[in-house]
Image 1 (tube, helix red, strand yellow):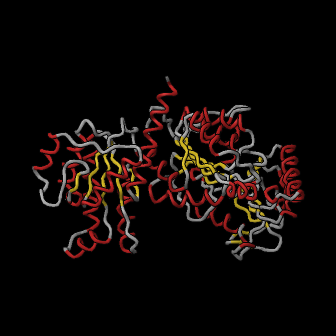
Image 2 (cartoon, rainbow, N blue to C red):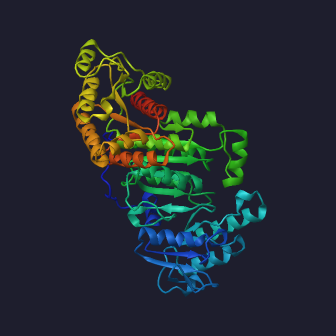
Image 3 (cartoon, rainbow, N blue to C red):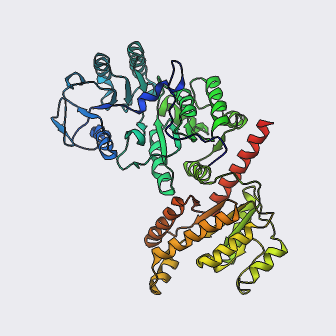
Length: 499
């Protein structure tokens, strides 16, 4: 997404004392120790997953498992304690019971560690004074030693440029999106859900209870981070409301910011406290403040991914709300028009000129050229290009929505006819690229996937071809329409704030 304010990835200004970038070092450790891993995976051996994640992403620094009960973990020498590790340790991941935490913190102080991440849970989020007191002691000892704390009760940091990861199988390639999440599950879920649609990340930060570094610290950091162009956040509660919304205002003025609020109901609010010891607060007030500072709110992880897709792959927001819809099937056309209107967009009647041009190569039987354009040209590359360019030439159209894909039916047809399906998919995508260049208007694709294994394979292959060519692809028309409508509203909101 280019709104005239993109930075160049990798150009890192020097951090000054008090600068948000002063915490940049926690994303680029030279050596990492994982305390508490076990060769046996499961709840008792979760620490090993962090070791495996760092190995899988190709971490190039020192990686040290620490557990006095084992000599080796995943092929690495396992040390009895941090103090037995030769050489410095920058970052320590805790996967030990709460009762062992303070002794390990003291070892971190003695070792000169710079940052600590607590996967360990059982602190203030339990509502018990004993756990809250241990959390206070952790922060107190860490601050006295100048050590920054991530968590507790979180999965920590994913920074592919530094080859740091919290989960095996995470993409190695970095990208321009950052995700700040109070929930470790949502952090991992977004990474898994967004990756097949072409979203790559500069940072993913799971920060849990935020006993030391909190949402405002990370939001201020990401605002200045030259590797981040789009910021997403899952927030349950905030430590300092005034500071958070100042940080949100500054971030939103520089970059698109999308926020998912947890604890939107009474039941959700109770779950929030037991999850991260946060107070959820009023959803209405939260949304109003987020809107006031120019950010976008969403209501689910799926909607968050959709917004990341549209901000990542649309070069510019649509200039208006007119949608030109191209697809096949009369029922599709009716529902598409309804769904676009219900999202707050409109499907304008195409001009007589455009309709007449479309009729020259669109069969009269079983088709429509009014908008939506109901045509089987979606499976014929040359006709698809002509259709899209003609629809885009209508002054009432600001964005194109093309319903296409290679589900079970087209895949079987191609196979039966002896066609090279991969070549056909590539030809369609190449056509879409040429149409986008000629149309000079954004094109969103709907790649529907029937619940059939074969269709899923075809669709995922086609979807990857699409995003690698810079297309925003969505699984359904309502989700595409909703994302486009919210992006248009975001553009209008920014224009109002600039006045």
